[in-house]
Length: 187
Length: 399
Image 1 (cartoon, helix red, strand yellow):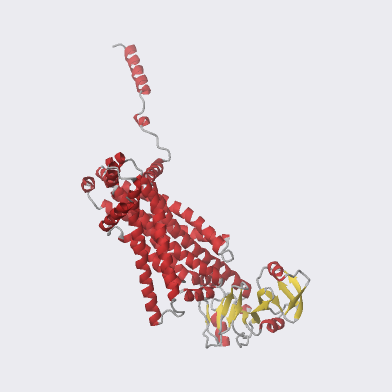
Image 2: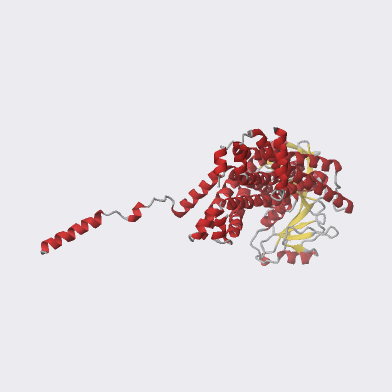
């Protein structure tokens, strides 16, 4: 049943691609920053050294970049609450026709997870391209690290997907366990 | 009808009037007045979609936490910058720095010079002295050493905190390079003060000049220009201006001049600007912008779901009240996010930046961030409601 839930979720995600654009952009912004911070860690470390307390400021920059990424991911969860509100009757129909809660949960989780994955990947790729261009034109004095770019990309995508699933699961869980009769009678 | 009957009837009528209840008393009481009602309405709406409220608060709180962390660092820098310049030059009106400039040494917690004091001769009537200021690599880490004229030979003045760090006590000996000096514990300066000759022996010929105007020029607001012209150096009241590396030095006028801020305050501001203008500042501002997007997006969703409700309100002339509902709801969201955000920032600062930030800096940063909130809360509420109120009530009811 789970694979049907997954397929249903992917199909409805395609239908709601436009609604997923804003959360994807906010996630991409956060991912862009994370990848840039990791890719240009040498230059940022130099700046942190100039400010004094190089290690502490270096840690603070990474912490804040990841925090901004999480802010972007929360928008995906807010969009999920909007999706749930729009699809209340649909969930009621699924519940009333005997579809179990787990595949419905998976179907609804697909949207934030897909948004987070593609948003983070888009932002990370954009950051890698921007880093490469900056490195090529010599705008990044301390250079752009390829390993840092890959590390940033992996962290951005992994954090986005996990955070999107974690923040979205509670509203989805509540919606899925709503009595079908109440969902069907919702205005 | 007799007069008695008329009088009796009037009395009965009065009694009936007194016994009839005031129609207003039948209405429900509303504790807290209009604001109380708006607050209850906002809370009722929050209860309707608690997950969205929690997520909006979480998103904005994360953004506020990021900005608060950066502001805490910049405020700490401002406090450090202000203190370090006061410790370095005291109350002298003129500060002449070498062409190589001066640097705040985080390891020593004080300003040190990057080059030898400028080769100048004090103009007639001016009083001043050359000061040695460099970093000494002690066995207990780096220590700033200031050579100040008037300090007794063979004596080292240092704060109790520095004495503890160096493991010395008042009246005891301190091995300073190849010299043994007697410790005098006083003051709160992070630098160790000795005689200029000894300081030069320890840290080399690095330092600056400090000077004061003659009594006749007291109160002038062009002191720097006056001194600079006399010694042949450029002058400024702006601490953010660095000396020309190919020049001979720069004269800082540390008097308030025509501005409202003291030199130490301006120096502190330039110091904190290094943080807010850095990568940290940029990232945190982007984070705050994303937090605002979350707020607007959440309110737009709320407006969309309650179109009929607001259609009814608009159709009976309560269009303005819709805005008030959202303003109060937005205020609740932002205040809750601010509380969580500044507390999270406090924890993050304590865990990640224990040596850099202080509780005072965190409190000041939290207050600074609170100043952004009213504007964000108001705009966050107005944008979705404006879109809603542009539509005719019948269009809202038709959906």
